[in-house]
Amino acid sequence: VQLQASGGGLVQTGGSLRLSCVVSGRAFGVYPMGWFRQAPGKERDFVGAISWSGVGTIYTDSVKGRLLITRDDAKKTVYLQMNRLKPEDTAVYYCAISDKRFGSADLPSFENPYWGQGTQVTVSS
Image (tube, rainbow, N blue to C red):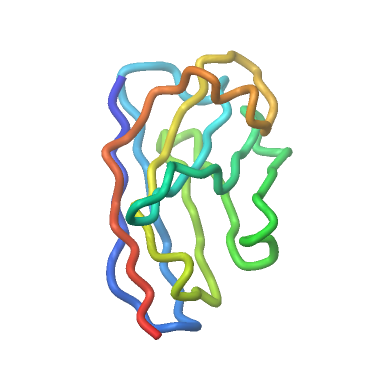
């Protein structure tokens, strides 16, 4: 299983970015997908997730209303649309695919995920 994340970069406060993550090596449409991030010197934190059906999403409080997760099963891709970015959003962003078929958009679905390689997002003040 391989996950290839892209779309990171340098953006000013208030700007937008869209991250993409393409999955290969396994069926895509039956697994929840998630995004996590790791800031320098900190642990990897949960950002949000989308259920296998795409109907359910969940976000950590600090990004609610600014970040949006969507998925395109035909392209085996999950997206993270990031709006109104803040310096505290600076981190390496990782996508993950759950190992739970038909799982929900929740943290227990990501106890043992497959990880992508990460893409750097830097928000300047």
